[in-house]
Length: 87
Ligand SMILES: [Zn+2]
Image 1 (cartoon, helix red, strand yellow):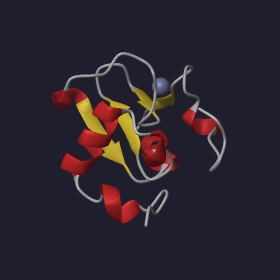
Image 2 (image 1 turned 120 degrees about the horizontal axis):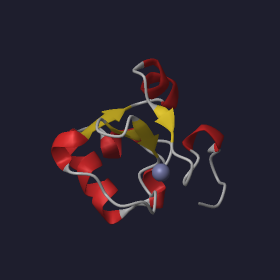
Image 3 (image 1 turned 90 degrees about the vertical axis):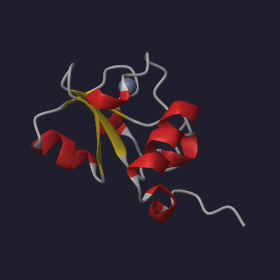
């Protein structure tokens, strides 16, 4: 059994941080990674350099990150992400 984009798999910050460090593509869409120092938000599988834990906050929806003042990463384009699209 391997549920894809099952949000319950990424219900805690610890699970989300682990998925970010592993750049788990399966986590894309389940949550979003916002970096407070750059004011950018990313998909968990973004290939950009990984931020420090203290600079990261997680959002359940991309719209939430936008509402909090973050802009979409130009590299992983979280605002254009759709389930099933290639990274
Ligand atoms: Zn990114």
